[in-house]
Length: 357
Image (cartoon, rainbow, N blue to C red; front, side):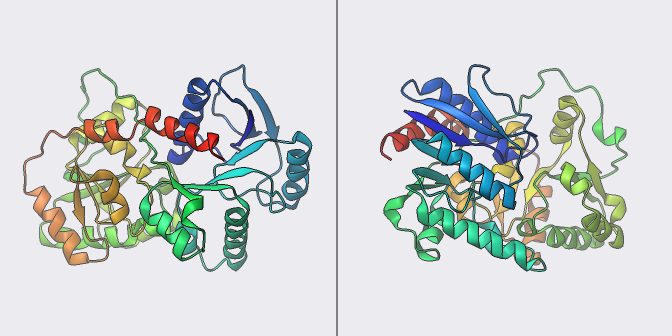
């Protein structure tokens, strides 16, 4: 069977994109019954096996040209089955397809100042869900939301648990004291998620302000390129009185990243909303202790392998951080998580889903 995969959204630095790219590489390797063709953006840099058939699409998603030209191409190619890895498919496309839904954060945490974007998000999402043969999500909470809030039948929705795309950790011994190199004079937490509204970063800065009023010896290191380039968030930090204790770092070498995690107290993720917690990938790769929001979506995946805090309570966040700062750092390993959520298990279930469409 010929299957076409819409991968136009792939971005080399995005964790979900990395997951999808590795998923597809494993799928193509393990699925001997089907043949795959990829639709990629002409800006895509992700590498796939050379023997694959690849079509490059230059039209931007959501543009009028995409709606007309890409939809016409899909009709012409006469695909037996399409797989879209987000909701941004051409509105008029209604043939056989499977739709992946990473999360529903755009419905909860969209920038309401841009009403047109919000309208388009809802339009594409509802249209894509309605016409799909199967909807794939990544955990139980999203399945329940799709069913209860968007009226998608339970029979149509399948949970496909992803896996963490682990970083290759250097085996060389760390020589450089990263705190000295970056002039960090205090113990520090690491935040390596993105800067969407659901990530609760303003609350995190508020909590660190209050902590430093009490004992003045804790910092936050932000390891994310998007945030280091986010002018509004940087202004928020500058306007706080703990600006000297917030460090924006974009790592250039794997050795430096390993050093940052080795010297950190904890990794912290105070999100208000998550689906599968891809943001935890780096912390899991470097066996860093994790303090994350007590959301049922995260608990479903991580169980008791990490520690939790309430993302809405400043007092709870402060107490959780104080509690763990006072304890000696433990050696953490995530073998059980990585065994449960593996590329092989995810691909095996996806192949079975494809057979039953």
